[in-house]
Image 1 (tube, rainbow, N blue to C red):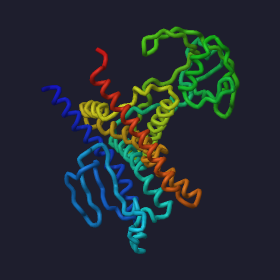
Image 2 (image 1 turned 180 degrees about the vertical axis):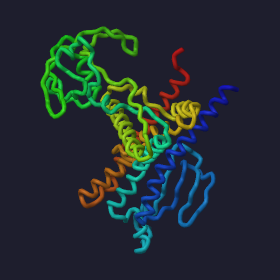
Image 3 (image 1 turned 90 degrees about the vertical axis):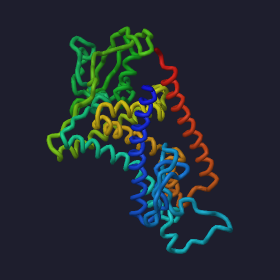
Image 4 (image 1 turned 90 degrees about the horizontal axis):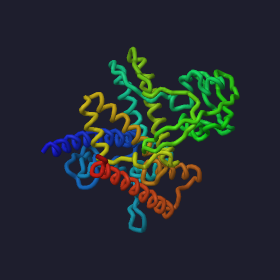
Amino acid sequence: MESILHFLYNLFYFLLVLSVLIFFHELGHFLAARRLGVKVLKFSLGFGPRIFGRTVGETEYLVSALPLGGYVKLFGEEPEKGEDAPTLSPEDQARSFAHAPVWKRIVIVAAGPVFNMLLAYLIFAGSLSIGMPMYVPDFQSLMPVVENVVENSPAEAAGIQPGDRIVSINEHAISTWTQMSETIHASAGKTLTVVVERGRQKLTLSVTPTPKTVETEEGKTIEVGQIGIGKSPRGVRIEAANPIEAIYKGGQATWQWTYLTVEGLVRLVQGKLSVDNIGGPILIGQMSGQAASQGLGGLVFLIAILSITLGVMNILPIPVLDGGHLLFFLIEAGLGRPLSVRKREIAQQIGLALLLLLMGLAFYNDIVRVFFKPG
């Protein structure tokens, strides 16, 4: 009985969180379309069969049976082809998505991810404005910026100082802390030529990482190189003294979480981050339940993070996602004509296959976590 109640608790907050994310995403498409004069036929939370709804003006607002998504249906979004296709009047063409200038279509499609970022910003800025502090990723720790130097370490001997930014190692450009760490770890006992940026100066230093035996997360013992530099382990506690300051710091928090999300995706593609980290509805449900148990602050903070993730994922240039549509429109703008229907169909089939593969992996990881977790 307790496990059933726990499941229902997580399910409720999962649906609550997902509904907020979907609503705001689709609201972006909806408002942009209305503002640019494109007729909106439907605004739906969920897919599949209609549960209930109401038509207001020219738009039907409804809730559908499958809650894992939502959509805004625009007039002329999928224009009919062939001899039997009806001829649109000039008035209908003016309200049709397919007949809208390409820049209008770009704005309408981009508005969904943009509104996800806006939701996160409003949550961060709103929380800070009422005196609710938060921890965010330290942007300088995501970048290869040295926060502290260990005494009597190779870094100190080489002349590295707190505040230095690592620009390159052995003439290979360094852009993230992770990239720098991996290079140093793989160079135990080898002398490295390190270029650091200090103020407006660039200095070339030599440092030899000290070999050290460490244990990995998998329990394996390996030897890595270390030079004795550190970054903040928790991130930065952000507080705002007043609502005006919260406006700026809310943007700072949004940017830093977005940077972290993009970096994670890049590491995933590079194979430097395990696909086991990908989660689906069950993981989101568990996270939602845990966040809700911490109070309203925890729940809205989770919504902000997931909203950024949804915005970043949707902007990826994968057909069937917003980013895929944007790619088609940008190509059309460059060529002066749209891609052929056949090419778009092939691209969409490939995109759908990739999306289904990703969803299948997420569901698989969820099942493994629930039914086959160790202990």
